[in-house]
Amino acid sequence: MNIIFPELNSNGELLPIQNSDRLKKSIKGMLTIFKTYNITIDTNRFVNEQTIDFGKATMEIEKHISHLINEYLMDENDNKLKEIFHYIHFWGGITGRLIYFKKGGFDKNFNVKTYKKIVDRIKVLKQDTLCEDLKEIEKLFISIPYIGVAYGTKHMRFWSITSNNNKIELPILDSIISKNLLKTSYFTWRHYCPYVKQMQEEAKKRKVSVTALERALYNKFN
Image 1 (cartoon, rainbow, N blue to C red):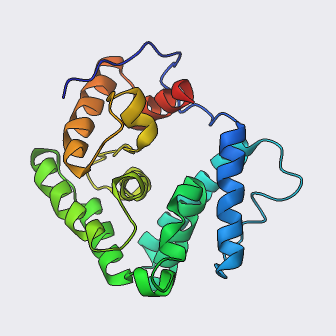
Image 2: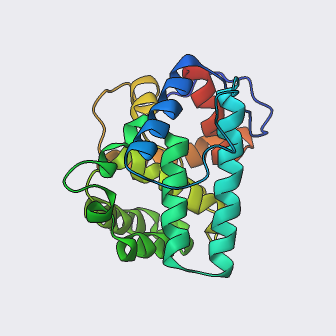
């Protein structure tokens, strides 16, 4: 896999998320799922009937997730892990809905012990064993129903940015990146480590963080 990266208007800073009708529909759809299946996190402080700029709202959710992860790192408990999981799905939008209503819903599908194992592995990721480490995380995500590579890597993004001991930042691999950057509509976990390595190389070449490069790519493709 050899990725050809496009020209981007970025000075290396983390750009705001662009507002769009697609983003609005996605976030509102997730709100409906949460309401229907009694997921009680404080979404109203970020998105309500007065919300106009869903890009700005999503950035505020992003900041809150980082805050919650820092709280967890100081006082690890299962309830905080579940709260973080829900907020990442809120941030990610409607495509993450299946775990909440398929085959018994969230309480049947989610395994907090497995999620904690994922978090613990992300914290200690090392560059020289990155692909092997990511493969072990992949196995854990596969054991949680309805969490594929697109949503698994959303969780990996947030946890790596805030908690990795070696300052490794992991990008998201979803349909937007797959279609527009990898030039394929079919993507699986096997594409992930090669994608991460090329994102790292490109970010280093441009003298930006992986997260800043990723945001610039998403804004361009959206």
